[in-house]
Length: 195
Image 1 (tube, rainbow, N blue to C red):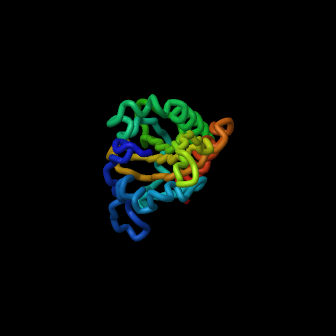
Image 2: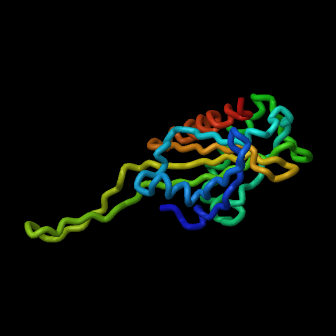
Image 3: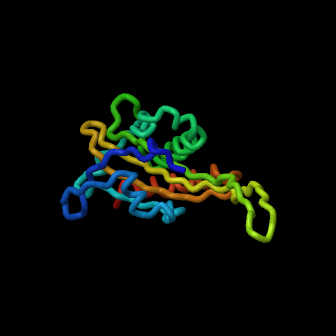
């Protein structure tokens, strides 16, 4: 289940293709819009949004930065430690493959991200119908994790959001977790900079 602190995100401003500024709904609003009954209906897909007025050709150096979601909820980096390391490794590899350089001193942009997951749970089940005595068992739902990764690229000088990727994936086999996360990060960052 999503904790309320996972959903507490501020709105972001983006510019559409006509140059008009629009307000991006908060993550909480976005999740409500896609429906709680069908979270991550976009599983294994990547949606990209970006500021069409930005000259992405000027971007050459980047620095990873902790996302405000993780800053506001210090327990989350511990919960998602493995996922965070996988995203950082895959992100560095993909960005450097595309010619971007990590730079901790004077980056052009900050790259930041957060992860949200929803996992399988054990559910009590029972049968107390008129035809039998009440019995209670525990049923374990098929173990899988549905997750969302949001990657933001922010102008280092102005703190303006330039590019965002919404990524979703279902992981049924934890032995394939690393490969799926790496693939998702690559799929997103291959689209940066936008054409």
